[in-house]
Image (tube, rainbow, N blue to C red; front, top):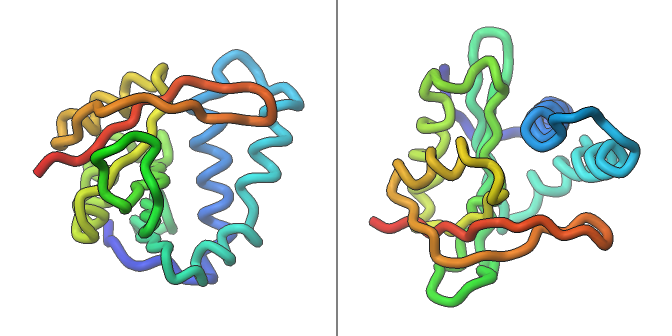
Length: 162
């Protein structure tokens, strides 16, 4: 495994991993059009190309001998939904399911923490991710809602505590 900055040519891989991880994490009872449409509209090669050329965005990937197996995305200048957090958001940390538990997420997180003390939002039902972040020095500092159209889902806001 190696950690490196993402390149424009990684955009399609980042989109594919995002769809795989997001659907695998949040869609447990079967895929319906509402969530499929969201995933296919949100996680596109074009959107990742835009992210990778935006100066406020930083993306690192974990790469094994076959290709990318995870990535972390940091956004600078992002207001947190609760007071007292930095302006650095850990926007995404995705690792393919078959590579979880092998240190990939931790290596990506350590790289991300070189940018400062970020905050993040994690789905309140995602107990595995919440436990991972709490074990790495994050603390619950509030709540927010993740919205897809008119639907809202409770998220914990976590902030890194050095």
